[in-house]
Length: 159
Image 1 (cartoon, rainbow, N blue to C red):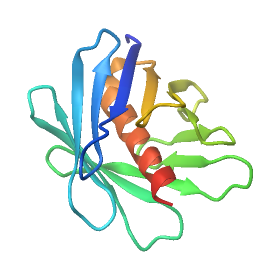
Image 2: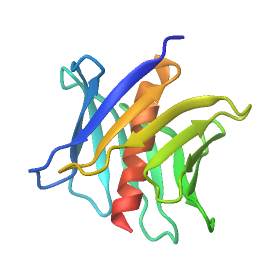
Image 3: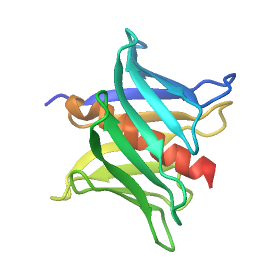
Image 4: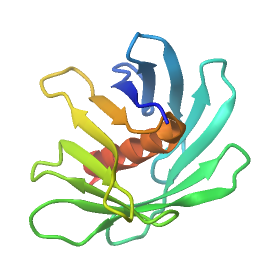
């Protein structure tokens, strides 16, 4: 179980949402390409261009909801915004994780059902594009961590 730091930057000049995801040394981990669809559809590839998964917004919902899929199109789970007054709360139904954000929705922490911190994401302010720094407690969770940040970023920007 090795902790991983991930740097997440949205490309400024692209027709659809596109992101580059780097490790802390500047190596490309993932590329995210937005695809034309009703709602957000974000396809994640590894550095070699092989598909790893998709984040797809479900439309016609009261609160934002995103389905997470692996490379073969099998569902991994769903992240959805819950009703709350003071800070955004998101749940991920595939493993009981809970995502909490601060009042301004710039920072997030993800906790497992036992209350252990799984990941933390910090949005850097005053940048030309959306930029996040993500710390993942177990590197095996890096892809799902990126999916969570993509869904929350899309939910915050889309509503």
